[in-house]
Length: 394
Image 1: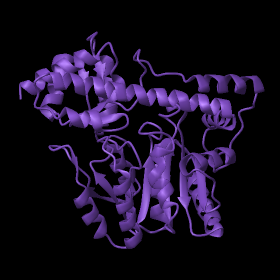
Image 2 (image 1 turned 60 degrees about the vertical axis):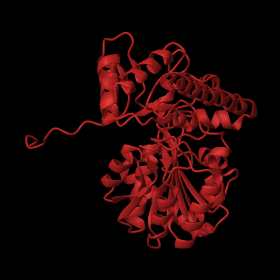
Image 3 (image 1 turned 180 degrees about the horizontal axis):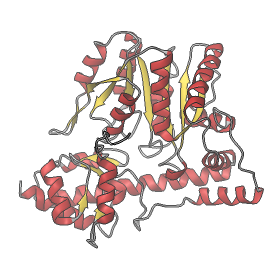
Image 4 (image 1 turned 135 degrees about the vertical axis):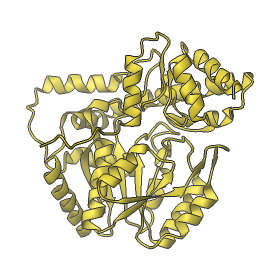
């Protein structure tokens, strides 16, 4: 019955993680998968999360089902985090991680809006392609980043967006662009949103790294600006990174509508899609975040911890770029210094990425994306020396 099924292509990021885990080299460094590691190279248990979990254990809650749309309190907290306030014009549902929010949004676009295509940045997170194509959407790209120069292709981006038909769905990264780390500034965002408004496009924002760019509020500039318009839009959000709850699969999908009645209808449509897919989301992760955000002291503790994580990443950017500056390299180290969030598009070639893995057991995602939290004071000099070596050889 199943003998005709051929081997599947491995996921490039997950397979890289598997190769890293199997590598016996004691100096190996994982700069591939998007996980935040602390200065000891460990995934942290945030103190705010620990305290929230202790409170939940003391309450002896039963493990019942959540509603189809997830926790109502959690949905309200998502809106406040993203938009600075709650809105009756926004339908928000809890999802199975940020990826689940993207898939739910794609299914909504296909089944309820009858759209058949979506435009994403070139480059974008590789799984965007898989998720949207898996939802039967044809994926197109708009210009965004030039790897050789390390520059944003802003004029070309604007030109392409200006040519799209009304109602076209466009995926945008509000902050910490994955994989490049190169974000639009506020002036550029205003220009993009002006085009989106003029062309009546449908923006789908994917914010997976809120708080890792410039701050919890600063990273939502684009979302809060578009909320001032009369545009409909979608937002997928994730708590995997900024609360370090990777395994709890905690996210949300928010859809801004033209009226309260429409928002109610949209939530009903999303519930229909959820029910036929996974019935309802898991409860534990949202209970943790609810506990944190409902307590002003815990919320501040979490925000402070997140700020420290953001600062550590910036320090690693400076350490790596400064080390490359002192060396003799063909690599443009300034882009590593100036980019934001967990990732950097370094400009390393696929050949150099392969050399780093084979000669130094340093694992990067081709064609040269580094996950900065994988660096720490114990390995940053080793990584710097290795990059200098392979770029000098070029």
